Image (cartoon, rainbow, N blue to C red; front, side, top):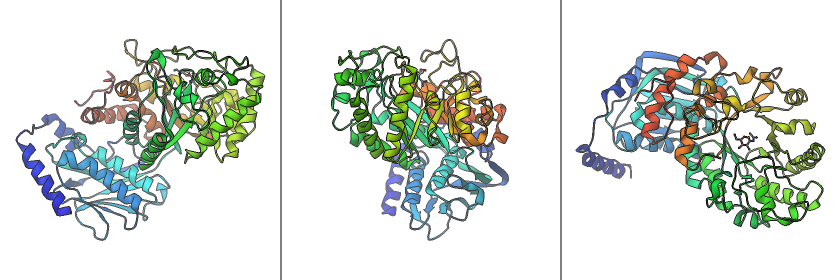
Length: 527
Ligand code: TNX
């Protein structure tokens, strides 16, 4: 079978040779002079060794830990990146032997790598990635991708040489939660569009994708017993387009796809505000019993579930039970932001009743940081989205034992414009160039919030102005990698000059992957 694949690849190679165009020579130079630390996120420990380098060739094999299906899957995913551009067969075999190859092995790694880290050694004769878990192996292979020339990301055959700079990396994350959020409510994004974003963020060791599945403009996930949520509440979006929703099967497909890339999906149903789509679908959820019309504008803060009706809590429980069943991860996000149409006392009453429902189904509640003032439950995860560095309620929650997730809007909101001329996006939290997105320390950002209380960071992408993958990519790149580095890399590696040089090398990779990135003038892009 391997021989046949080998011959097929040979044939393809010959056929494309005539049309092959040599890449601009400028690309070769930085690839050759690149060091083992030229990666985003910056590795925790990197020791370059200029005397060593590995050259991928026709005979390169990926060896994976014997008996581990997951290690084999990580190896296969790596091979699928390498084959089209190198034209090499790159077979993936269980590691009975060590040859001239790339080995992905479980166990035997440096003690510091923990659950998600890895050790990577690049020598003339082999590349060795060791980790305690398949997630660590996957992280190691994402590093390896970036150590190869950018042209490795092309879908068609490119000229080598395929050299990986020599040395050793010991790498592991600073924070457990390294997230991205996508708002699929304001504009709906298809399964394929979300998969594309998963592919992109997983390259930067992001391990959570928070999906904002409901808002005033659309309800996007099927819930048994409440069919109008999707058939009616999901039928439009901002601007009046057709909207859409995920069936249970489609959603599970996304969960499984993300899992292959060691990303856990965190579902959000925003409540009690941001609920017009649900209120429009079911009249009984409204205090006055009258369903409002569907909404396709972009205002916030005008809708609320009816706090004093029992049906509200039946509805919420049905939703949470279903989300919990669809979620392998520990968190269900229950929103709770901008509840200007809910009285403060009602808001507290609602959250105090709803957070135990999340616990009843075996999950912990995450919520926008307003939730911090509603209870003493230390398992709740407030997500800070303020625009400054002071929040006493969040600090008080941390003092009671809550972990905090950081998404300060003026730093991490990917839907803010880069500058005045950015054609997409909003400005309410400020203009966010890539140096601003990179320029903060999550471990010492909110006044009196210690690093030990910070679970991690998340970069939200709200979609009032975004309609397709090109738009998503333009807002996320290059800022998402900046936030990803803040989540992964130790603060000791934090250095704007180093980051901007490493970022410059990503431009060509995105171009090869057809990622529509923003060519920030702060960066000397390498292509
Ligand atoms: C605020 S941030 C919101 C969203 C908007 C976003 C636009 C937060 C918890 N709520 O409803 O989409 O601003 O940037």
